Image 1 (spheres, rainbow, N blue to C red):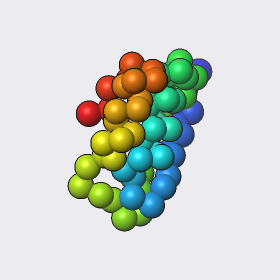
Image 2: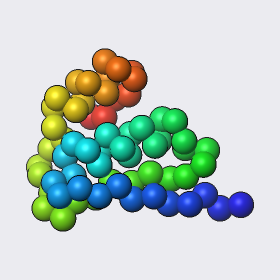
Image 3: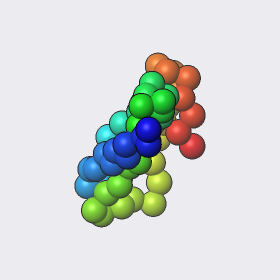
Image 4: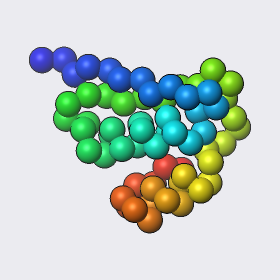
Length: 62
């Protein structure tokens, strides 16, 4: 069975969709492939999101 592909979308693709992608990969990579996209991308991921994901889940989003 092929895994479904899930795209998480937010405007800047710098925080919420990046978090959703990371959590999807961390907790459900055996169920679906996670991607994040945005309609007006920022040059880097929100550093607060990076810090919190590392602190809470041990996930490195860099």
